[in-house]
Image 1 (tube, rainbow over the protein chains, first blue to last red):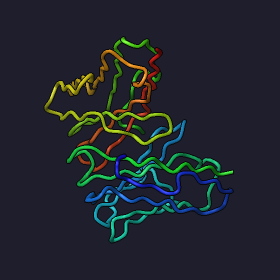
Image 2 (image 1 turned 90 degrees about the horizontal axis):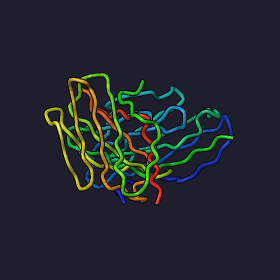
Image 3 (image 1 turned 60 degrees about the horizontal axis):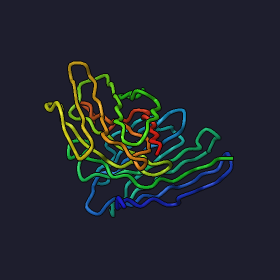
Length: 115
Length: 111
């Protein structure tokens, strides 16, 4: 158990809909990262927050947004969903910035299926 | 594009054999990490090697780093069926605050 909690584990929805994925980082970790994993694209970095502030942005679509709340949990909002958004979405956390202080701790992921 | 690229994409071996996976990357890094992912599960950190290190060991794992060639290798010795998983390298590139992952090597260890 990494200590990172993601909900929901599975989500099935229709095109055009909006969903929210939630992540609780490991106790004491200040950084939260979101990654998208699909078969054809591999593990793609979406966005990072550090202590409530956006720190880095990767290949995140404009239809997607995220935030980190004062209690450090984070939410990833996906809107106007398309079939191609079907993927496994991972949240990871670390105490400091990725890599500098060591490893990332990953949650078990939220599997999104868009029909 | 991905910072790290693993090679091979898939590897199938017998229990007891060694497994070697390679990772190449494009820009200067602060460190390189290897992660393991069991099917459909979250990634788990295996080992971190810093840019000023050339080799590191952890149990049955041996990682090497050649910054001149921008490459790393992960060796798993005396593999077990339980080592069956996907293995990813991740780079902490200089000037960035995130880890960038490759597409991974899928390792199958048969009993």
